[in-house]
Length: 84
Image 1 (cartoon, rainbow, N blue to C red):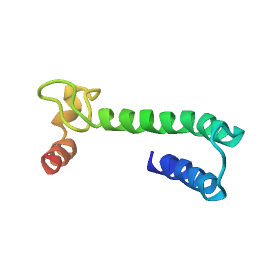
Image 2: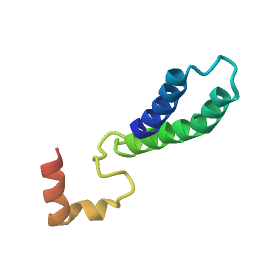
Image 3: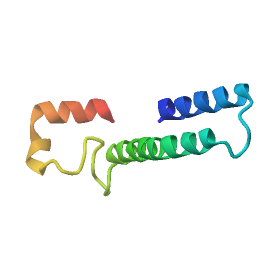
């Protein structure tokens, strides 16, 4: 997400330093090009952040899609104890 914002900022800086006039087509192109890239990056970051959270009481950080039998294995129990 921050990389997308940095690229957007860099292109804005180029136009500002060049004295690009308000209403110039380059401003419109920058906005058009970067709007979708930034939005996609924000949505991906949000998806990843939500994916790491437990959805219901009693769930672990490793997710709710694991069957309860998987949590009984010594390997999984050890991982869960270290994660908490």
